[in-house]
Length: 579
Ligand SMILES: Cc1ncc(C[n+]2csc(CCOP(=O)(O)OP(=O)(O)O)c2C)c(N)n1
Ligand SMILES: [Mg+2]
View 1 (tube, protein in one colour):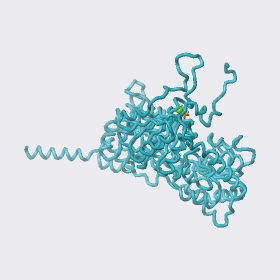
View 2: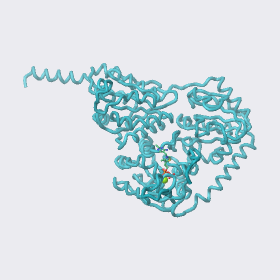
View 3: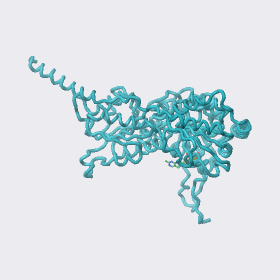
View 4: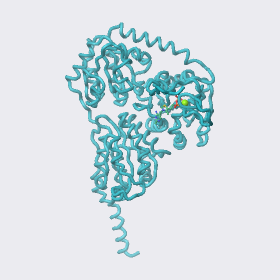
């Protein structure tokens, strides 16, 4: 080879080294901002992007359906306070991810849905491109913010905006649209590196106004029957010590919402979880911490809240949350950590303990309810009822308080929430604000990956079906996930009949006596079939000890459940229903 050819070759190589492209800029921007995991499904135009991200050291977890990848990203956001990333292809993949994005936004979980999209010029003229869809326009009303990046030089800023939008203020879902062409756009490598943005202080503290804090303390001090309600916003805040100190120093009974269970142990002497209906009715001053007065709290009014007049104090990062349903006499706007710390400063040694007739009444009611429930949880009936099966699982969590408990279904959800005590913050992950089915496997996978802890997912047989194919994903990544399916042959119950006597079964009924455990075996996981609480406990213990992907088919009496679990009252009734 002549010297001239050699030098041209070297020059070309140098010139190539000095270029970067959209693929690498997105990866570099993610890494610069500490993103180390992507949840998604490959395909045009993001297949190579996934490969390159993996090559660059990002963990790329491939799912079987984007909705599950999206749910994984969302709960990763909840657990880490960093936006979870979901990566999808255009139109159908994007739409599959969108449900999770909307659900994340509703639940205030920070996530970013990054979808590849088709040629802008063709999409905008509606000329029928491959997977054509105006994704940005569709995403906008369903999430907190939506952005599109057209130039490689804007990738850094685009990603920075997405991160900030997802985690600052009230967290939520963000959509980031990356057209296929962007990935192969090249630019000078040095200029590319300079264009990247490391987001400094992505979720700045929002300090409450001192006057608001004082007002709240004054109202709280005047209470005869005070109550603290902890929502999943309080769990998200990771201000666990301050919240515990506030509850304990004030001496006020607390009620945890579903995903706030474990912030303080459910067995804590001040926990009013087992006296929920009594405390809601009888309290005179309620302090909401990261909990919204939505349907889950009967909007703060009506029968559930009884006759006694109430005053509400509300701590929330979103000012517009105040007065959403009833008057808030003491709004405290700021991030939960800052607000709780500020309140704590006012709760000194002179703080009056709440009247003992109140705390005593709450405790008596709670102990009474717990005692009434106890024998039911110890039954070893076969087929199992919910109480027997959940009694067994209750012991599992008691013995392994750091395990993560994922839960969805109707009866399977509502009864497990009441029965299974949680002991540590952010260990209970469930259907959230919408009561959505389908979060199960996505949540379980991300929980295992983000925390490295064992996961126990307790699923109604219907609920499981929404994300069940991800058992392959669990086996593929060999995750320490134990799935228990409460198999009652259907939705709510397995006993409904077709009133016409025709050959179709009733709409709520599934194939009888299905063997979900065999699904797990198909992918190399452990499948177990159990019919008694004792067998169930043994099987779950073995799974949790081994860390092997396991699915336990737990046979539940098909007649044991009730319509819609605990929320049957929300079903509209026909007044002219034919007898
Ligand atoms: C996405 C979605 N689709 C439908 C529903 C309605 N829904 C509520 S609970 C439920 C399933 C309940 O059955 P299962 O999971 O088997 O629990 P079980 O009550 O039988 O224990 C369904 C379909 C929902 N909440 N979310
Ligand atoms: Mg069922």
